[in-house]
Image (tube, rainbow, N blue to C red; front, side, top):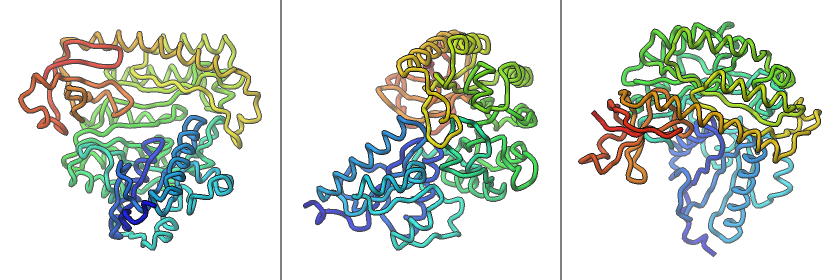
Length: 439
C-alpha cells in the first residue's frame, strides 16, 4: 500500500471542461489554502491524500472524459495512491445518483453550488472575507473573471440550466474588487465569462448593465486588456459595442456563439433569432468597429438538419467570414427539449459536416491572416514552447485562437518577455498561426 507515503494535508484539484470550471476550481483552491491545506492543481506526483475532480457534463465527449478521469482516480485509490476522492461540478450535479451507484470508490459527490458542503466535508470553513480571492491556475498575467452564473435562455439543445441553474449576476462592486485583487497579483488581461454575458445585470439592476460593468472594470489600474466571451445574439445590447469602440482597454474581440446559419434550425434550437437578423447584427457590429475580431461556434447535425440546412450554413460561413470559428457535433442530451426530437443525423454525417465547415473556415482564416503580413500588432506573450516564444494579439484569446510565434533563438533572453506586451511585425502566416519579430 502507498498510503504511508501520502501527504496527509495535500489536495490535488483536477479541472475538466470550460473556463467557468477553471474559475470555480480557483475559488475552491483559495478557500482550501486559507484552511491550511497544501493545495495543488493537476499535480503529477502521486502523494496527495485527497483528490477533488471538478467535472464537465456538457456534451457526450466531455461527459466521457469526466467519467474516465473519475475511474482513473478510483483505481488509484484502490491501489492506495490516495485516501479520499471527491467529485464536484456539472457532471456530478446532473448525474449524482447514478454516479453514486456506479462508482462507489468516490467518497462524496457535490454539485455546482456545493462549495460550502464540500469544504465542510473536509472540515474546512468557508471564509466570506476571501470573496474575490483565487489561486490562479492560468499564467499569472491573465485570468478568467466569471461575472454571472447559470442561464435563463431556452435553447433546446443545452443542458447548462439543468447543471448551473438560472441566471445570477455577480454585483459590480464585487467584480471590481476581484479585478483589483487580480491586478495586485500581476494580472494584465482578464476574460469575462458567463453562460450569457449580455444578460448581465437584468436580475440585479433590472436592465442590461454589461457596458457599465466594462467601464468600471477598465478603471482598475494595471489591467490593460479586457475581452468578452459567450455573448448571446438575440437582444444584443449595442451599447457594449459603443463602450468597446471608445474604451482602449476593451479588446476589439467578441465571442458570440451563433450555433447555426439556417433559420429553420435556429427556430428548432429556440435561439430567438433568424439567420437574417443574425447577419444584420454582425453587419451592425462591424460597421461600428471594422477591425473587430468575431469568434463564433456552430453545431453540426442538429435533429432535422437537412442537406439544404447544411448548405445554407456553409454559405453563411463563407458570407460572414468570421475571424474565428469552432464547430461541435450535436449531442443528444436527456432532459433538454430537443431530446424529444429524433436524433436523425448519423454520427459520421455529423462529423463530415463539421469537418466541411472547418475546411471552409481554414481557407477564410488563411486569407485573413495573409492580410496581416508586414503589419505590426501589440502582442501579449504567454509562454515558451517548442523553441518558440508564444503570444497573442488583442484579437485572440488563450487556448482557442490564433497565436503569434517568435523563434526563441532570435532572442537573447526570451523568458523576459513572458507576461509583457510587445510590438511585433508579422512576416509569415498559416491558417491559425502568425510568425514575426519583436520590434
